[in-house]
Length: 174
Image (cartoon, rainbow, N blue to C red):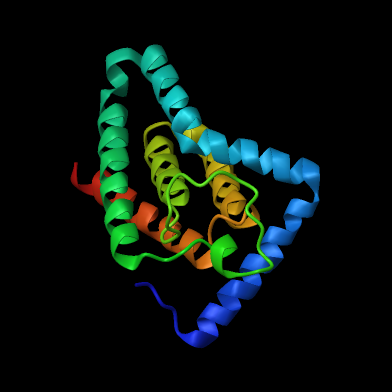
């Protein structure tokens, strides 16, 4: 089971509460819910299909890296979630309210963030003109997770780090 050192867990709890308080702003909460839903894969797959349609066969290296990144990301985060069993903050911290729909039971790491960072890096590598919008979208996905009470900030940081490492390895080796 996942356990941070006590002092870090207290900090993580406090940051989770502070982040989640932003849900009081209904427009922001609704916007971040939409971002989180799009981060489920809809936005990424739509962009990938659009690029494939526009570029044809030239997009095959991007498609290959993207698919490998997606599959590897699922394997990594499912293994980690199965072994860490970290409950979501809204289940443990009384001041955190769930304002979104979790895709699974456990919190560590943030799969949304892992994939958002990995996909953004892969897309930006292949289509540099899209770097700014995909990085902004990835950042919004990451921000949405603790604001919606679905993840601790440390889950998001870990997901982002894993996604970045994964993308770096995929782009460097394949």
